[in-house]
Length: 357
Length: 274
Image (cartoon, rainbow over all chains, first blue to last red; front, side, top):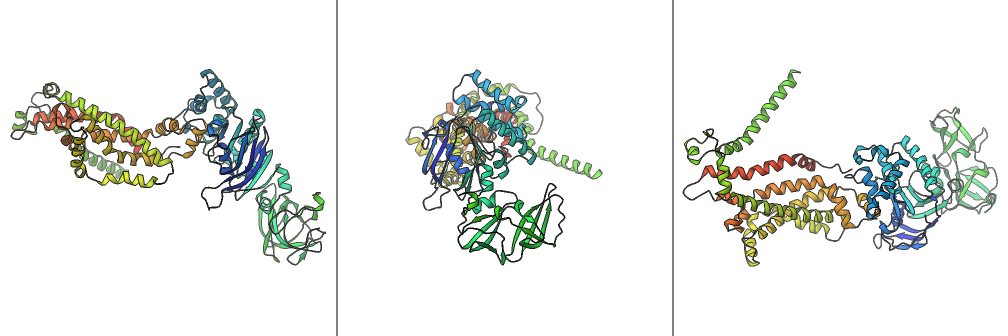
């Protein structure tokens, strides 16, 4: 087991072109489940591949277990990786797929067999060891890919969107299995995904990336509750946080022509106001009034979209499961001052006295 | 229902006609190979009066077909082995590695496919004579390997290009070098395509005549197609023996094809890497 440290890691493919990854720094503690989260093209996979040794590092430093790894080839980094496509060797049986990496390390046959059987036991692959990958279901292939990593007993596990090829039901159960596996092995795991549910449910800490840079690092709920930028605010949560243009003047906030109740200790000027859909409270005399333009009953809750005429923006709110809202109806909501997030013109969070920083 | 029966009947008839058209000449040659030349000249299309299987033994021992057969086996076997390994390596490089001039090299190799052999044969003859490889099986092997390389690279490159790059990344993480990944992953995964080029090249080279006739002179180094030519005299042609020689040449090809045809079709239609 080992800690992984990135210091100002960067990846530039061609001189002149914008870097794919820029100034990424974080420490993954020994045994931590760390998730890299972001939309496609944000550099999370490239970062993972640099940790794996599949991409060269053009800037910064990478250390695993305290040892600098920039120039160490992938095979000597003591890492194992699970690929999005699983990358199972199609011409080998399940057993050989798992044993392939061990044979290269010239372990004794009995030890290889012991490890493969052990991994097969953990993952329930026992009956399929003699099969070729094409004779397996998607879920079984995914397990083989995980098994191939487990048998290696690596310092660090790397996962590159391992669940994105599974259907929704299987994804949910595999998510729990992976979390269980992490508890069982106690290994350091770095996991790349674009799925915030995977990130929120499995991670001990999340690193959200945007345009090749780190946007925020923190525990899942901390990131959810206190997003550092408008990007994080808009990316996490389903539906995401409402972000509205507002103007601050003398401690009061104005959206369009509407003054928000409550006082806000922020510098005067334009800013972005964020509020989560679940924090909006329907109220007859609510400050924000608009026309209902969409109603999405999801069973456990109902998502309602309000069109705010003053700023021509939709406001999403989570109404209860018994909400009776009709399209075209006029509805007013309150945005409690304590639940409001504020971001400056550059999209950075403005700390408010209430939060203590 | 009646329509479908009719359609089936029509298709069966069509296939029967095509089979007759394709297999007719072969059957004819097979018949002649069991008859003597005088018998053949008297009645070209008749069935054998007595089945002269002994002609095969005569051809094999007295007419030197054992030598020709062995020569063909050596020359074709060696050149197909070389062209498969070199071609697979070249195709793997061109498909997998990005380097300046990759497409230029690919195009250069592939463009030689358009040149008919007649254009290069005189230059080849002189080159081989100059380096002392004229009239040698080694020279013929090198020429065969070189001539079949473009097609081989072309077929294999398109197949290797479809092998997902993740497989090689996985092999790297599993601890294998690029060289080992080629042999343990790329080569076996590409087996259907490899089988295809092995069969194609074997059949093409087994029947190859032009290069052999120009580059081989000594009777002891002749391949099968040249051996058959020996029976075509200026005045008299020994049709019976020519047919027997043809059958000796054809039978291995038919066997190879029968044995590997399933793999051949697999390779031609392959896409199922995943």
